Image (cartoon, rainbow, N blue to C red):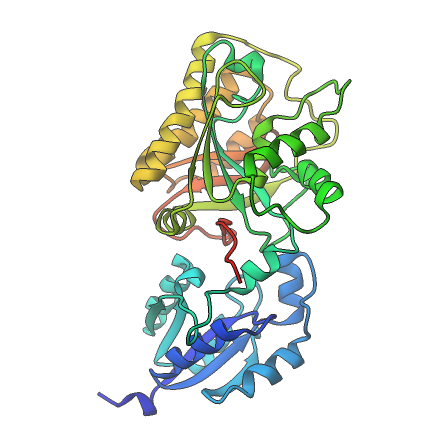
Length: 385
């Protein structure tokens, strides 16, 4: 076996805000051999994140290339979440390295297919500095999104007054620009931007959620947006909102455990399908029945229990139960065409549900990589710099 000085190592990333954490990562990766850094192109970052990088690709390559432990820096020649793939195939390094925040099953599967050693490093600060990441830095100036995982519609009193139950939501980092009409609380996000600009509250989360909910639903509002939208945006991590006949939950339970978040990021896949059409109204037909409402609320309960237990099969069942309950309560929630698309895409999934009524993203639970899935990132409490 050759020693590390004769091996080549590759890492990839945007490196738009180069900081001490990146340097520590480069230094550890370079201990395995000559380090080649694939830097995301301007075009690819704009495509994935919905905005251009702060620094051009030439500047980022220049900065990374001048780090002592970096042997070579180059612009990634591919597109998408695996933009480094063409370079990985061409250069065939001995080792590909990611930190734990950058792990995805797709990266691991690609390296396995190419016969390249895959290493996952623990993210830790350099020297005595506090932990920091580019995502944490940008999260201070970019508003998150909300993903409703299971139990949606329970936040409407006309549902939960029949039978109480849970809605499970997750706050997502803005690592891409999500579709507007896709059940990702983008209208609530616009209200938050008017209220707070680009800086999210970092404390008093439930109180701030009440403020956001009130701003989105002023007196005289005909259709009250659910409080799960506001709370899902404001509360870090993954949250269970328990409703019992009111617009506001009677109880909130939170999980900000990084291990649970990483597990959920690994098994929950979002595949873009289509935005809900203009003029779409899921409420044109209602079948308000206590049995249907109870089934929906229990789906939220099951999702929460399954996430905490890291039970993919249970989470998949919760997603199935959510969508089937939607169809019972509100038959126009998901069109026949979307149901057919779901059947085609979900053949290998443990369960699936759409991110919103009328379309959006198909959420699929699978312990294996899913083609065309978005790299999901759950937003945990901000690191204190």
